[in-house]
Length: 84
Image (tube, rainbow, N blue to C red; front, side, top):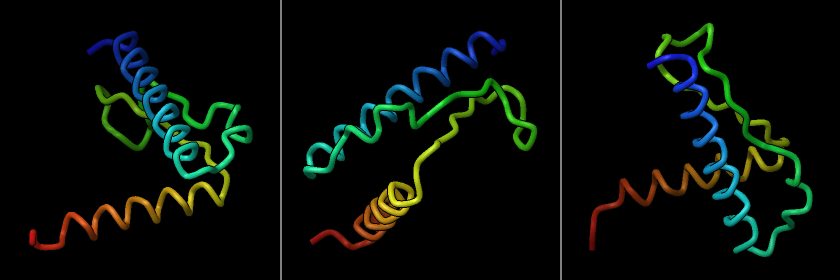
């Protein structure tokens, strides 16, 4: 995959992530005004990761980062619970 394709892939993923985050906040009555600025950006590759993989970088404030971490943690716990 060339650099242009990597950038395009990462741009799409960043946009999807931003829209999902805004929907999640709005569904919970949280303000979306403070996330008017972009929270996700893209890079074609990272120094720390192999070439050929698009990367998305999050720029959340500390409170939003904690909310996202808690959301992911709850999701992991729900996925690990046996089906009833």
